[in-house]
Image (cartoon, rainbow, N blue to C red; front, top):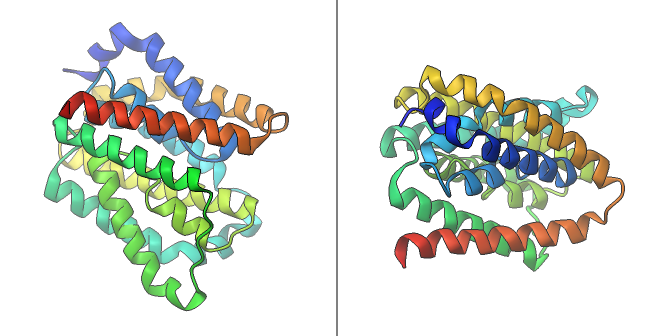
Amino acid sequence: MDISNQLSGHWLAAAAVFLLAGTVKGVIGLGLPTVAMALLALWMPPAQAAALLIVPSLITNLWQTGPRATFKPVLRRIGGMQAGIVAGTLGGALWLGVPGGAWASVALGVALVAYALWGLTGRQLHVPPGRERWLGPVVGAATGLVTAVTGVFAMPAVPYMQALGFQRDALIQAMGISFTTSTVVLAIGLAGNGGYPVSALGGSIAMLLPAIGGMALGTWLRKRLPVAVFRRCFLAGLALLGLYMVVRVLG
């Protein structure tokens, strides 16, 4: 089904999803593609959901790559991972095609549960500096493969970046850089497989406004709410939603 036709019946629901996803990203620095893919995939194919999130994800992630003064030092730490993301996403897109079908929904659900459970344990991982050179590209390639299958960029990139010992602002910037790379390469992969038709662009641009509005709201909330409490609730909700998606297909 054409994405523009899909939006004609569900544009209010889709806008609400991107408002929520942008709010989550504004509060904790990530979660827009994860929340958007999880909720949109409840009523549309994962490939259509992935196509819709391209523009909102790209713009909000570019916003998150600042400030310029620390951009180069952060990029040097995660440059190898970015190369792996490019290779893994494009390779996965060529090998597996665009996200779609029941298997993609199951894979997305499993990825959501794995990410949520990792976050809820509160465990702090540490990567010794000597291992970054070879481990970064490996983690990037794995992240790229997960992105090609599910449209979600967080696993295992976010745990790896947290394990590098970045301070809070640098970590948020690193996630912005990584998610920008994933968004651009996913768009290329979708276009190469015919999964990103011209009709998708208008719908994706339309979802930018609620996503930006949500991110602004999330930034405002972050100054007033305990981030740790919000993050736990968010991760628990993702785990339950992921389980639901798996059970719905396999049950």
